[in-house]
Each structure stands twice: as structure tokens, then as C-alpha cells.
Length: 621
Image (cartoon, rainbow, N blue to C red; front, top):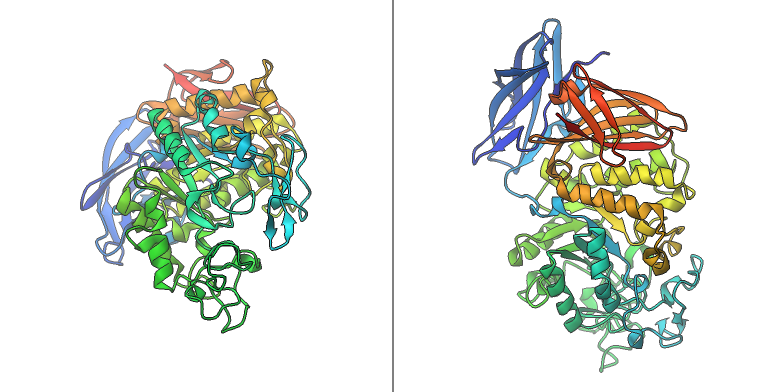
């Protein structure tokens, strides 16, 4: 089925909101025999077709303009476009073009009430696993056999910086290399020179493990990482550098060593105060025990991580509802953090499952925004998360489903479970569009895109140390819709298998060498381009060419346009770019990575790429 050219972007050039309406623009090819164009919307849950007026013609483009009412009964306004032509109709929606009315999940979406902080889309995040980044204060480092993680089991193991991490299922969580907050603080110049604008730290609150997803004290920095006073100083310095900081919040569960639970009777002066083995404990209802037994619900069935009971008002007050709730505490002076990343937020709730989960996620959001309306509320979701991303719950998610999964399948030929999964470029585009269109545009821009993280194999290892493929994926990370996040060490080609091998120590000898790994210069270049470009941060996305292992898309905003071209094939490929669809009839295309140029003639350009080559083109008149 041959489809015509129809397009609607969602940035400010295409959509202008007011209190009660949205002004929208659509474009078609001049030669398309269009008789009428309508905006389809549902202002009162019933279809309304609003006639669009024929606007200006520019080259081969015909513009159409219309205005639709904003829904008053719900936060989200849905709309799509119906185009009548000489022999039938076409529908333009978020996934493309079809010959029939699309399902509502494919409609364009706008949330007039709940929107992410404007600053998020302009950031380049950098994720740090604190124990493995840098040791700035050896005096506070964990020592071997200093304590045990589980009663008398799992004694701590102090290891030499850079030594191999143990295999999965052995001493992974109890191994310590000495990374700390002072080490991170000492590297602010390095991070700023790289171009990083926001830090995302894995948990830093008091906890027995090295990963610290087993909190024992939500109000204090772990003493082996630093102190509250040092953290205040760090944040002040970050803010002076116009950088942001996001902390990891683990509120679904605690450690068995938390004073409320106190399985091993370590943390309370009254040995009977903890909930474990004590049905009369004042904290018994903070968790989910089976009657008066010692059977309780642990996160994902893991006994060392007992789930909190959010139906308990005392838990609610402590975590989010009270004036001094933990969520609010770290957003206020003197700490003034800018964002929360909520661990396994989709799993918290009442009872064994996640009953009333949406209620609590909204409550978390409202608590954070009550202190800092510009707080970024980020959720961790390994799979499709559109239910949480309609505006009233999360601003964005760790975009595994909408970015990491499809990028992994296309470049590394693996799914999230590391099973074989091969998709071609048309399937990649279909996946990316399907995931993105379910969200309002501003939430799309606030998704946190990553190639890898502390929970996944490092991308370079996934592609068997193929740096060319890695560089193509990095090009996608910095040009696609959403905020890019770099996992520490990516810039120096740090490798790593699955957890815990993906948490190796940062190899500072590589970063400080004169002959840095090739990825360092590319990443620095991509970061600089991203930070300087409103189009890459906020511009609409438009697919220009898609073939078996190659594709091209544009990010445009106002007069600025970048075109990302990727050839993932093992042989050279040529793509025909229909630049007239962007309103470009002539000029030069220049690759901002290499300086190479191509001539635009009669609204098109033929671009040849070597095997495994990527380009980032800008237009010169």
C-alpha cells in the first residue's frame, strides 16, 4: 500500500496550547489531491470532526491549520487527522498513516494539566554506582569482615580498586571497592569537561550492601560513602556549576536490618522493638506478615528485602504524606536535590501485589511537587509503562521498553532476557513509534534513555566489543526523543557482563591517558552537539528513509534541523533522503561528526554510507 506524505509534529511549531484549545498544524504534499482535512477529537467522549483550513504552500508542502477544544473532563486530549482525497481517505496518527480510523492508543496526546519540568529535556545525565566510581576518602572505606550482611553470613570483602568482581550468586553484594561521595565530588571537573549536566546516583542512604537497595536509614548518607554535611556541600557545588542531581529512592521495601524490622536485632536499643519475631511490635504493621508467624512478603520473593505495607498510615506519613516525610526531606534545604528516581515504583502498594499502585504513585508525585514543583519524578520500569506516564503520575521512566529494548534488539540481537532477538530497521521504527505515541509529547521528551545501567550487561559487551556498533547506538542515544543518560565508564569503553560484573571499577588510567579510547572523543562531541541544539532536545521527529539495516530521521525545531543517518549493515548502503518533506529544496548537508558534505538538489540528496557508519547532518543554505 503506497502511502502519501502527511505529517504533524508536536513541538511549538505544530501545536500551540491555550487554556481551552489547541491550535494545530498539519502538512501534506502539494500534489496530493486533498478535498478536506479534519481534526478528529472527543471533547465529550463523542467524535467531533473539525474542519481544517488550507494554509500556505511552500515548495512541495501544503499546510493545514485548525483548532480543537481541550478536554474538560479529563487530563489528556486525544486527536488525530482525517484526510479525504479523490478515491477515499487517509488517517494521520502518532504511528504513521493508515486507511482507517486508528485506535485511540495511536492518537496524538496532549496533557494540559500535568507536565514534566522544562529543564529535563535539556539534560545529559550520567549514572554513577557510588562504590565503583572513585575513592576520595580511604579512611571511611568498608574493611573485610567489618560486618555481615545477613546475620552471621555474607561478611564484607574489601577489594583492591580494579580487581575483578565476583561471579553472580557469590559475594557480589558484600564486595566493596571504596568508592564514595568525596570521590564523585573530586571528579566534578572531569564530568563537567565531558559535558555532563546532571548526575543520577544509585542509592547513597545507609544500607549494608554495596548496591544499597536495602535501606536501613532513609535520613542519613551511609557513613562508608560520606556524610549529610558533605552531601550538602556537593549539591551546592553542583548547583553553582548549573548541574542537577537525582537520587535513587527505594521505598517499596527495606533491609531486614532496618530498625522497623530488625531481623538480627542489630539496630534497636530494645531488642523486642523490631517487627520480626515480635507480633506485638509497634512496627509489625509496617510490613506484611502472615498473622503472628515470621512469614512475610519480600520484594520479588527475596527474604532480605521485606516489602513495606502502604495501607498503614504510619508508613504513608513517613515516606510521603507527613510534613517531614522522606520524599520531601531531601528536596528541602539544606539538601535541595532536583529529582527522585523511584525504584520498582510499579510494584509498591497494599497486600501481596501492587493494589492501589496508581494512588500511591500519584501521592509520591504530589509530595515531591509540593516542595519543589520542578522536581523530576522518574520511575523504574523494565517493560511497557505508559499507564504511569500520562502526566499525573510520573514525568518520565527509565525508558527500557521504548528505547533500550528495541536498540538492543537491532544492534545487539538480544532481548531484555539476553535471548536471541533480531529485528530489522522497519521493525525498529515500528517499535520506537508504538512505544512513544502512547505518551503525551512532553513526557516523551522526558523519558530517560539509556543503552545500559547497573541492572543490565554493558552495551559494549553485548555487542562483543564492537566499537563501531557501539558508536551507532550512542548516536541514537543523543539524537532520539528523550533525555540521554550515560552509564559511568561508557566514555572509556568499560566492559562488563550481567550483574554484578556490570559494576566494575572506573578505570581512571584510561580516562587520564593521553591516548584515550576512541569513544571518549565521540561521546564528548555528541554531548556538545546535544547541549547546543534545541532541535535535538525538543524538536519533533520525522522518519525520512527506512530500509533493511539502515534508516534516517530528522529532529527539527524552528529553523534548526538535524538528520541522523545510520547504516548498521556490514556493507556500504545508499539512502535517498526526501528533504523536501522538511521544506528543504537546495543547499548542502554537512556531517557534524566528520565534516563531509552532500549537495541537496530538487529537494533530495543521495547519501552513501560505509558499513557500520553513522552521520549527523545539518543543513547549510
